[in-house]
Length: 135
Image 1 (tube, helix red, strand yellow):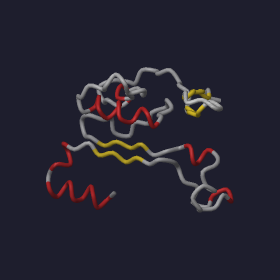
Image 2 (spheres, rainbow, N blue to C red):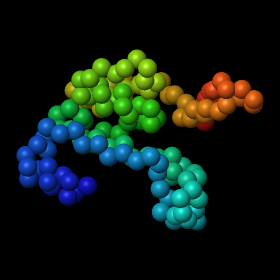
Image 3 (cartoon, rainbow, N blue to C red):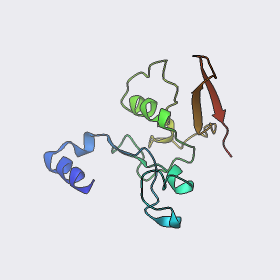
Image 4 (tube, rainbow, N blue to C red):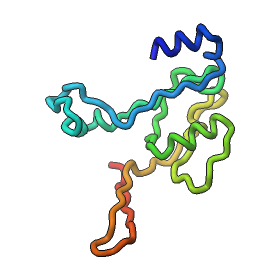
């Protein structure tokens, strides 16, 4: 990440570039005796804390930490709103851009469920959804 930022600075567009650091899941790195093999380390709170780091001077508040749960389906609507692009109505997530702008204090957002499970009904072809509520 450091080399990428150095190159952006060297070339000049660093102050006018939205930089996004994102992962699909957190890592244990052998903490809590959970190992490092893919799958065995995806249990517990460490795996749920996924990095979603944004840098865009003047557009994203520096050092702000969003208290509301950010879900994978919220990433695209958030980035699109920050870029001034309308989010398609079919997107299921919500934008967290209001939590990130430097001009204002973030308003409280409703805490939404973290998980959605999709599966097929026994013998049928219809997809059903269940939602796990936050605990």
